[in-house]
Image (cartoon, rainbow, N blue to C red):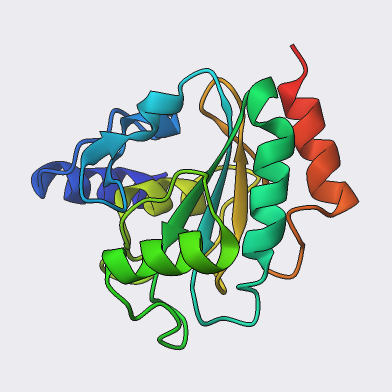
Length: 181
């Protein structure tokens, strides 16, 4: 409890906006891959699959499955959100423009992509500070393509590590369950 309090105080004193430790993901400030300020509040009421992505990783081919899952479930309320990060092996060293061009050109990505952030370490973005400390899904990000499933109410409900593909029965079952009214 003391650790969470200290983390929130540091965030407050540094000017980072967070409501409280139980706040849904909608509050955290991000930028789109094109540099426009946003929050995940644009997807309020949707089921989210938030994934830290990288262009030069052994798991990069998961973009194909991510896009297929997005196309299959987007009309039912699923939004996949790609969050590029260069925290592991310099596997996302490009600019946001280069990342966007790579994703759309090679993998035909149409799901929302955010600007590159840090998902681990001292400069970890507040969204990932929240996700990695959330009950039942928390813990440090160990590699690219870690997936967080967020319920329609903005609360994290499941986490899938890098090797678990987005189209695996485990992920699909969790998505379908979260999409039920």
